[in-house]
Image (tube, rainbow, N blue to C red):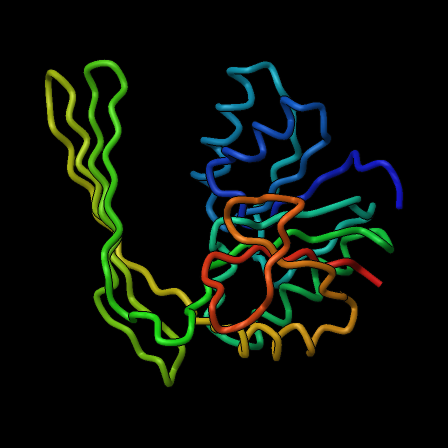
Length: 221
């Protein structure tokens, strides 16, 4: 119901989206639990002559003196919150940080009905003489606890050396029923629309057992 100027990204990481939105003229605030991530984001901003407010903090415990017009968290970062209590706390913190009528764009992967608990996603990229190979593998899944263990492996090759890095972490599992139940615990938000990862504004989706990559448009009441 108003012009959007001030944006907030909880769990901003290295700031790819913070930098992109700052370039488009928005005033950005990014929050992350990792200082090295924020330092990297700061370097990205400085390289482009941009500014943003970067805050070290927990996604489940934060507050700001001035409300934001909108917020976004679109890359499964939300699923790093491994308990229902933390997920609810996060949504309530975001709602408190928004103006009335402000929206929160929340993107995460849902497990569709009959979906596989195990699998691997791979991609390769090349930039000049440098090459990157990436693999994301689900190495353990616990449906009852609603947690899956994942491993990311990256191989970076340049003409002079090869670097291999690997990291293992947990994400919370959600299906359509789980996310509906979660949103019902946060009356501060109303679910206005659902999209998939194609972000086609004229093609809203149904929140049912068929949807996987999901983008939820939550509006503060």
